[in-house]
Image 1: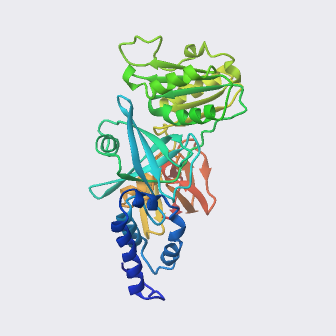
Image 2: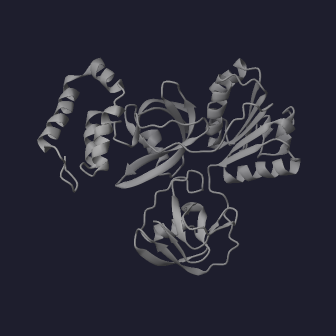
Image 3: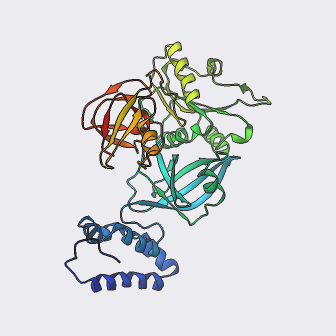
Length: 400
């Protein structure tokens, strides 16, 4: 165990003996007894170590390395979760049941988490929706196979029960209004996953107003969680679930891409809260219908692909100051700050790359940036901006 900088006010031998005791405990307590030890609320026991790391007397990476030897999901501050179950819920989608460590700060139904994976020395991350939050602390996510992807094939084909994954904090703004006189859930592809998390929670809490679910998929085999949704429909009289096939051959009762005709059987549609999740194109179609229909109820949308960014600004050269990295480079007014930072060899933290997860939030120190979704301008020094959906409107300096 190496010390960083300041010499600690205690004997290194004492620390070594203390760590040795834990390693001895790992060997001594096997089977059910050791599992009981793991289940104890161990996080408060780490407070002294956190204090030492905060004072730079220990390196967090060294402490984490030891904790991981004792139990793979243990870390000083980072959230790791053990895979407890794998379950295929569609031909191309796998549900994972995870038990996070004591650093997990909880989540709300409908939110997402970043999953981090290291491959060939490169740290990768992807965002996955929380489909269930259990009272005992377990959580569930669902992963759809992305052909040619760098993360989903590994998670689907190689991740085994007992292995661990690193998770980021939960994020996402979709909310279920318990006072609504009715709810309409519109999902395309893997967009069903956050909506399922909301649906499960609402039904468990006794929501009794009408609920309609329309799930758009290309093929029958892509109807995710179909058995569970059918069972919920049989159990709850207020729930109606229908699937719409968008691919060929079209043999379903409802066919084609989203259109108002699919909603004819939804009673009291104008009074229903509408939640939609899918690709950016699907979400845009729902928004256009909602505006043209003059819906009086609330609409919430979330896209799992990047929105079409505005390209109205003329391309101009500007100076980009990455202050903490001590770089001043030539950039342009068309590309996002995240793209331009990466092109200069920087590696800003990021997640969704579409302005949802806030992982790439950075402080604007000087200059003006433009929101690539809306075109709005922001120029207040000290203001947090999201690099993935912000482009420079002129010379800028950011705390990166």
